[in-house]
Image 1: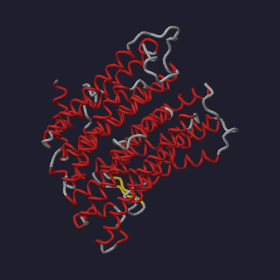
Image 2: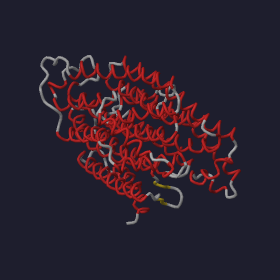
Image 3: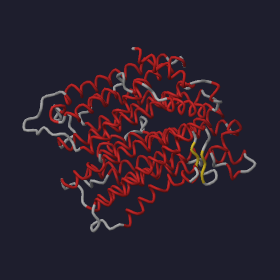
Image 4: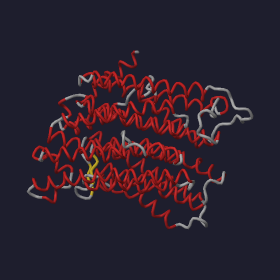
Length: 518
């Protein structure tokens, strides 16, 4: 099987799993059958994505499929890696989590079938969004992720879950409509410029003629793009759907929403950022990204501190960290772009871990209220340890991976001469550190509730979490060379420069060495 065929297979596998589960009757087929199809699908996605990404990173050659419709370059490889790795780990965690819901009577056979079918559909739509080369297809894929996940958000069919699902679909659909306006403006302008307007929908065809696009049209279009896809990414002030959807969805779905989906929306913004910079220069795109980025960070930091609901607290952390990603894009330069990509990866892994741990907490304590969740390390030692690791990593403490990306963000901000924004960022992150330390001090190390049995989660629930924690630590103390090479190549695509013109890998290696030395 050649690489192009393999890329098609990567997209087809989760779709086939969805269709297979959709035709199976819910009541007469055991949930074990759905678990088996689900597991085969996510493992297959991991294997295929890793083969394709490793091939792309090592050879540096873009993989295409179905003509120009789908392509896997270094930039999309970063996000396909996230989908493959987090998808399989969260998918494995889903099995004991849903089994617990079945035993507790929270899920009926039809809901179990729907959960696994829509989980695969969710993975399929994210892979489409990450690998699409057609800008209109990118919008369709992001909209499709909303339709796939709205049923997952409301799958418990409680009043709060259904309200969260409705809010999610209405806010995101309305927001992403702005993304459609921006997309169509770019398409129409490109079609007017190109001699062959049948190519005007393909990103790789627009990039070479981006400097010929109308600057006024591109300015308006990029504003619509940031507002539209920024809504899906959870940027302030379009983030209102995020706390409700993340808190009411099953914990594995929350992990995928926060760990991967928000980054897919950021990837689309990055694709249009490349076009905008080529057309109108860096000043306007950087200004709008810096403004939304720092506002998201500051507002979310205070919300994180005041929340007592574990999953809502993690949801506001998502808003804060997407703000950091966008802020790094706004800083610009090779280091800023590299910091944005690194933070997307490291935050994705960290948040996947913590949402899975929140699933452990729900199974153990039956509540998300942190005032009632105390002494986790005493009643569930492994879960407590993972919870502490996750919150220390989220706070940006060394030696965990997010420390590296946040330090890189500060260096990028200094290089960009954005001192006021750096000071605001430092204050906001200090508040976040206090919030994370409070959770560890009170919930992980607090007094054990009376009558609580000392017993940890099932083995199958803990294994994915331990792997995620190991990755967070590994990437923090010794960033793998293939990852740095991939980030360097992806940065070259965003900068539209030859990767040999700068060496982000050396800069990141210097940051990593500095961290290890301290």
